[in-house]
Image (cartoon, rainbow, N blue to C red; front, side, top):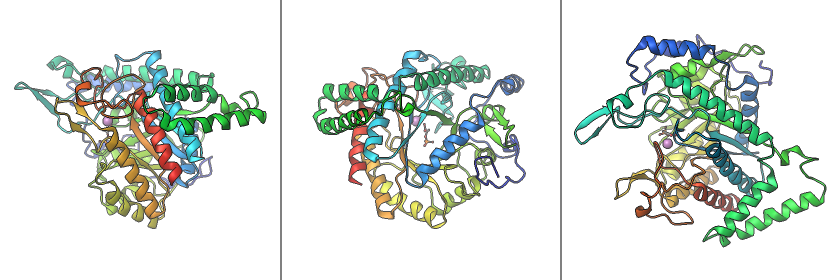
Length: 457
Ligand code: PEP
Ligand code: CO
């Protein structure tokens, strides 16, 4: 029995390096294995980025999502960058997440668990190991933890020391997140004021005016009752947890530590980590690694996933059926979601697995614009979320949350939204290192739209 009262069965014959006996896909081709091992040795001597007790606290919060008493907002960069690393950029991302969370909390009428794709989201799976431009073939960019984005052989060569830089940037980012979320930046009335500014400035803001006014009245009511940030600390500070796709298993293993309190293993690179759509093979190295750590974990579930496959994943990753341990992140595409998700919801519910169901409306809706940019349309993103809610309504299950790629910056990477970005606008500020992200306004816009859906359901 763990100290949080859950009973995870001991994983059979597992160790932090047992994944090494399985096939590990999507791993970098490190040119010098001695250098790679040396970097891992350094990493394994570094302090943990998060503590086991924090991971347990997040697991407990996610358990409330699993049984329909809270909503999960997981959001942040597709790929964090070593270059776009500043206090401003961290603050702006956090600000958008907080703004979205306030709108969702009010509409869902339940707490919103906030998890950033931040402070560690540095490694990317790729559909092709190489990229060819004008007849020249080079290794694909795999995220700043591995190599660089420039199209030269030198930039694309994996450099193990990058793992150390990813660690340090994660530590600094996490430090600032902790300071901002506990130091007054997350004050509820202040976040609400940002939303009111958004509503006032947005061309279609009137649509949300009523909802914003209702939140305003609720806040005044609380204040009149004597509930302010002196009496209720939760109005003034919050928790924003960290998460990333745990792709490069050497890095994750090096940050995996035995908790002195419980003797359990935790991957201390982030509070929550997830398995991507391309690495969820049941017999593969990622599932092997994940089954033995005790963090709350996620697993992407794409349009080809069958009910049997998903059940096997649930059994492998959460044999003790611990609520909050496993979040299934569906990413089917707007067209496939309703029909694709329903059989999975049914199978998992019938088998009695207490998972969190969340909707990634980004990765199944990517296409290349006529101008050659990888993009997504706001309407397709919203349509997938709508389909997700419909599937849950039909199966009488709880639509636990959303998982989105966003930035606080004023980029032009996704089409549509309240400013109705068009194909010709994509070139203006297309800054992502990987997938197109919603900008700050599109993100808050999306939160208001999801709020409307939540109120309807
Ligand atoms: C991602 O979340 O950035 C990603 C690559 O997603 P998926 O594994 O679902 O394709
Ligand atoms: Co992405």
